[in-house]
Amino acid sequence: MKFKFRRNMSKKEQEQAKEEELQNEVQEETQAEAQQDAETDEPAKEETPEDKIAALQAELEKSQKEYLFLMAEFDNYRKRTLKEKADLIKNGGEKAMLELLPVVDDFERAMGALEQSADLESLKDGVNLIYNKFVKYLESQQVKPMESTGMEFDADIYEAVTTFPAPEESMKGKVIDTVQKGYTINEKVLRHAKVVVGQ
Image (cartoon, rainbow, N blue to C red):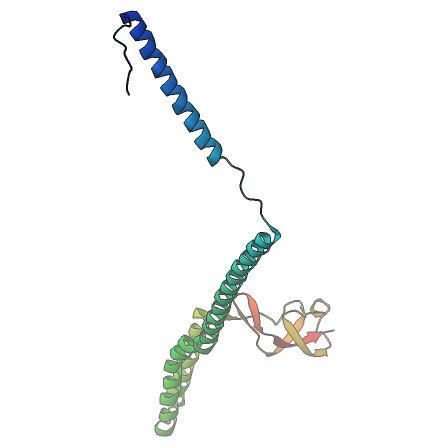
């Protein structure tokens, strides 16, 4: 910043001249900044129809890519769940079959004993042991026999193979005999009991 002084000016005049020059410089700087701001704040170029079409095409391409990605993800999920379901169906009974093998072993031993022993009582006891072992296995799998004889006939759990005159009035509409035992699994009917109903 330069100040112009004249030798013939008084001290007061020199100070006034100095102040005026400072004011002029500040004014020039303010004008320059205002001009720069005006250039910066020029309105943006108006969007042409071509620009709009290009923007829409870009947005469409992005949406298509996202859609294809989601479809691929869903297809992978579907294939994975189908495979898991197939494996479950294929191997789901593996544990059940494994636990049945000891019962088969017992039957094979009993069959071998039939050829070597004439003691019917011991053979009978052996068969009863195998039967009880098998029943316990079924119970561990939540398979239980259902009560039928003497119960009120219920078509949801019983299958009537025939009717028979009731021996007494109170047995009418009730199961008077069981031809084949029924079973439930987890409180759901596994096999309907075949019964004779009194009439």
